[in-house]
Length: 304
Length: 317
Image 1 (cartoon, rainbow over the protein chains, first blue to last red):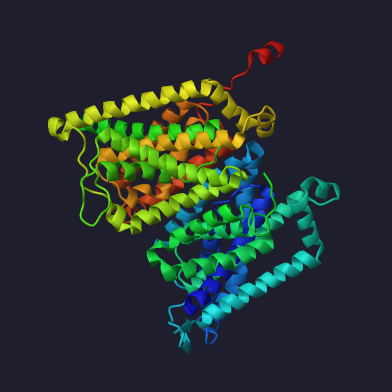
Image 2 (cartoon, rainbow over the protein chains, first blue to last red):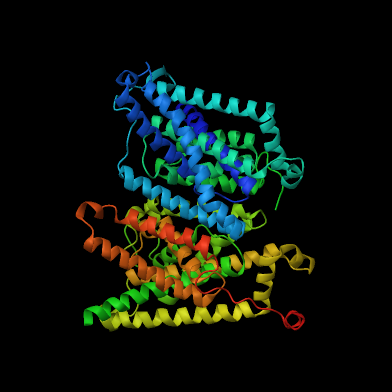
């Protein structure tokens, strides 16, 4: 039970990072982006490539930071991956979503994102193979925190949680203290009025993809660090991340954070009563529950 | 010769069954503007429903009620409609994203549930032991398959004519009115959410019919048949054919299903052995590009919807 709680918080922090970008894009561009979770996969694999590259150039970097399995080269690779994944999100928008947006309605975008997800996921599979990969071959043993109730935690998990929280605090400061944060919230409130006040909508959209992509990359690496990296990572996470945005209310960044933790906790606690085979279906049950009890989520506003 | 002919019968049967599902999606998307991201759940509900209701009893498994075939098929459609009704009731009042996400979710949950609930439908191994109707009199050979094809074609034509009549009826006009301008339709005293729910359930029942036929054809269904890729293929067929146009929907189905089987065949025939492991991935990438390309360059499809212009507007223009 305690183990489920702790695991839930951990998975929750990863889902939160993914959901923040998704909820921003969904709010601003008004479409459910089914390819967002693929950004997590891209991030995880880009970090894998650069981790290997740095370790090959400076072998000294490839030693693990005790007691983690994380290496200095992976730390550097995470930053590169966040930047590159953000850029690929912008590129995907330029190549596909922007053109579809110009041509048709919001729902064509939803379907285009289905197509983009399919392409990205399978190209990753073609490049990196269908077998799971790991950042580190070293086995890091979980630490027994307490025996009664029994609780196991891996050092990497603690690192992931702290790093995810730090990223969220940083984002909060950017949103609440900078001009960029103000303009972002202004656009979210009322796009036309924001434009009248001299905010460049196109630039804001680019920034949203950059931030969303960057956060997704971090989430992908953290997921890879605590589980494993495989091409269907995005497919497995797309529903929990959507559930997080719906729990929080579509468009609410703080809602997405809270939603991520709630979905993570609920999915792990559900394993106490359900056989583990059913866990992929739990996010759907959460979505149903939210739609019945509070259709617009915790912080969402009523909009059509 | 008979080999080619029997393959042709096989191909046309599967394509016709899928056409029925695409027609159902066309009612939801093409005519009403509802995004169903989980076609496979309704297809699967019909398939599982038909086999559970019409199959023979299996050990440690619910079902095997051995109902007469047509009743079982109808039961499968009803089950598909019920699932759609629940999902629709919860999401159709909200902004459109919710329907897309919830239907996607119901498909994931459906596949997951069927894979795990071995007490209900055999779990990962699927449902076996289904006796195809009239097998005793017709045997298992070519004659049976040819006759089954006729049965499927009759249902396809029936569905097609029904939908053509429906979209020309006042109800069809109402669907398009809601799709184009919900507020205007509401101001005329129509209830968009109720009409949308009707259309969503009707489309899903048609998908359930397709699923039931599919399961009958193979006399078997397993979670492997209800993977999300099927939703995607059915969507590709509609988008390529032309949303809003029933003829286009059927043409698109034959085109995409032909391209899919041909590319699978070509890859297995000509690709080197180590590439063949990735046949699925290559096909998925190709179909993904077809979709994204269509949406960017020809969103109306190969056979665009013929827009009906009212007489008064025409005389003015």
